[in-house]
Image (cartoon, rainbow, N blue to C red; front, side):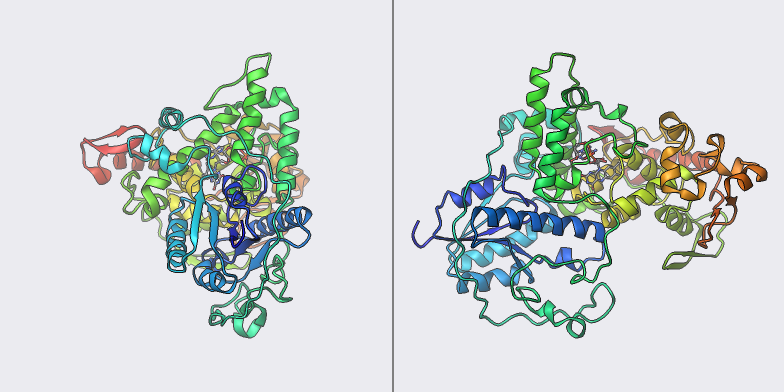
Amino acid sequence: MPNTRVIYWFRTDLRLHDSPALQAALGLHPEAFWPVWTWDPHYVYRARVGVNRWQFLTDCQNDLSKSITKLNKKSKLFLMREAPQTLFPKLFKAWKITHLVFEKDTDAYARDRDANVIKAAEEAGVQVIVRSGRTLWDSDLLVEKNHGKPTMSISQVQNAGPKIGLIPRPIPAPKSLPDPGPTNLDFKQDEPDQRPDFNGKSRQSADKSYEKIAGPKGDFAVPTLEELGFPSATSAHRGGETIGLKILDNIISDETYTATFEKPKTSPAAFDPQATTLLSPHLHFGSLSIREFYWRVQDIVTTFKGKASQPPVSLTGQLLFRDMYFGAQAKLGYSFGQTMYNSHCRFIPWHLPSKVNHETKLVTGEYHIDSTEAEEWFQRWKWGRTGFPWIDALMRQLRKDGWIHHLGRHAVACFLTRGGCYVSWERGAEVFEEWLLDHETASNAGNWQWLSCTAFFAQFYRCYSPVAFPKKWDKEGAFVRKYVPELKNLDDKYIYEPWTAPLANQKKAGVKIQGNGSEDVQGVYPKPMFDFGERRTVCLDGMKKAYQVGLYGDDAKVIDGSWRKL
Ligand code: FAD
């Protein structure tokens, strides 16, 4: 349409296939069309985005930019280094924009950000079009059909979802894209950011390029990790729509795996390949559409000759869990990510003052802390030095690869909270937020609440042993040997309990079990930081008391997976 000038704002939908918002934008038949991604200070300047997730994000951006250029040589993903709230009003004017289009985001912060941008657009006379596309069903509608309540169980999703309608079939990727208009930025830029960059230097003095919206070369290029002040990524898992779709193709090509997938039967100790799809980071960044995933699987299930698995354990069932947490967050907003003010999260007096309140100096990598016993446990958990090889291997996998299997996440989350350290789930969720490639505010907070038995799940007496549980999956300890190489030559018999290995066996394996992991000494692996059996009893007692009285007094009961006062 003549005089229709559209900014398409990419955020958590870094793809061309199955994008209802992109389809709506292209349906306007614009004379000029700018695909844009803006710096979001909330993301860029927050400490809790590790290097691996940055790498994955920039992979997605590079891949998308290339795909856009394939459809129109004059176009690309225009990467802007300024916050949307201040940038867009200037772009609206400079580029004579008539429409701003983007995919709906129900994360609490995103809602505030988008409300500000929508207000600025209205003031500038720009029409805003928003379409849902991040979940199977629009999360707000899901809540509406769940009687206006947060979705706290999978059956609520299974009841409410179909009331909205059938999960939409995916939309094909566009075959061409309109030309962008001129990309002049001849307006006054904001004050340069004074906050330190990732290396602690002032951005202003360290790198003038941060003042430039279009990047160091003025070409709107995707930033490099170097520009961001990061060292190289350590994870081999890479991002981008091309890779996401290829992984899905591979999975779908194995019809039996796809149709009979049962989550509880997949091994948390499997690596190379892992036992589940590892598509979560692609769903997070939108480099794979969730409806594409759903329908490709569902179509196999429908035609499968044998006995297909069913939700919630099946592959499509996993996607329902994602929608459940999104629905809970859509209703509860900011409070969903914490215990305070969260009407659905049970209060547990975590972090009980320790019996032996000793001062410990713990040195782990660059970290150096003076702390109470619980703080020491937390740090040892985080850095994979608890002395329990199963827990340490998982936490090291998380730090290095940015991903661990769901049951691995269960094991470390239970260990940190109600099944070992009795440290608040919020501390653990922060670590996951920093290191996960797939960090999703809704899924992370929700799953931590589940595992700590503060919401969604209440069977706190079911605890994961760091010894018996992994033995069930991996008797020889191949997973531990990979991620905790200090133990790689230890006999199978001792692999999950190295402190029980006689000195002669330790010597033979070239490892000494000693100390608290505070120093990185080659050939030394720490002693366990506590007696697990004792801690389990202490935690169970604590949980029992918290459930009896807790925040709600004596008269309380779990209804629909969450704690309610009667
Ligand atoms: P698959 O088993 O192949 O499942 C397919 C998809 O279903 C996943 O990609 C994911 O999008 C979705 N899914 C599966 N299980 C869940 C679940 N329990 N909750 C929500 N979505 C699910 N998942 C995240 O995407 N982001 C997070 O930040 C996150 N934090 C977690 C924190 C804890 C403490 C726990 C216990 C789980 C967390 N999960 C999170 C859920 C789950 O562990 C991952 O989604 C899953 O392990 C990703 O691997 P996959 O893609 O191979 O999963």
